[in-house]
Length: 191
Image (cartoon, rainbow, N blue to C red; front, top):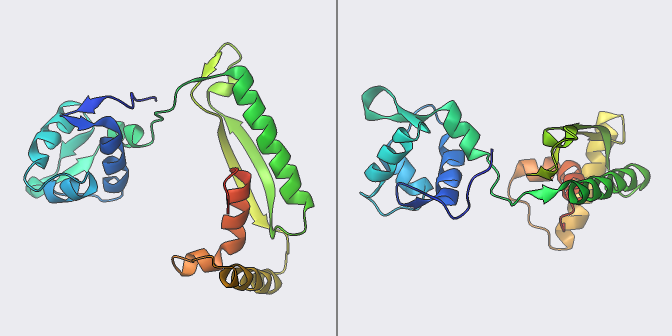
C-alpha cells in the first residue's frame, strides 16, 4: 500500500496519522487522549480525527468508549509514502544490498552473519516496472556458534563502542550490539 505524503485524514496529515497508528496498533484498546498524544494533537482536538479514522475504516469502537486499530489501520500504519522507483533503480539497490551481505559474511569485524535473504513483493512480478520498494526478509545469526563465546565477543564490542561514545538506549541495545551493528551496515546506515 502506498499513501500520499501530502494527504490529509480528518484534517490531520497522513504521515502523522500513520505514525500515530504505528504507536496505537500495539494496544488492544486506547482512548482519544492516547491518540492525541501519539499524533501530537492539542488536547480536546482528537475527536474529529477519531471520527475520520472510523469513517476510513482504520479504527473501530471497542468496549467502554475505547478504540482499536483495524486490519486496514494496521496496513495503513506500514504503508509506504515513498515515490515509486524504476525496476532498474530497485535492481541496483538490491545488488548493493547483496554486496553488503557478502562483505558482512567475509569481514571478521562483523560478529553477525547473514543466514538467509528472501525477496518478496512487487519485485517478483516482472511486469511491474514502477516499484514502491524492495521487500526483503533477512535472517541474522552470530558467526560464533558457541553461545558463551559469542556473548563475550558482543560484550567486548559493546564496550569498545561505548568507549568511542556510542550511547546504548537500554539493555537490549547492549545485549544485541552484534545484531544492530550488522543490521545498520546492511541497511546502508551509518553506525
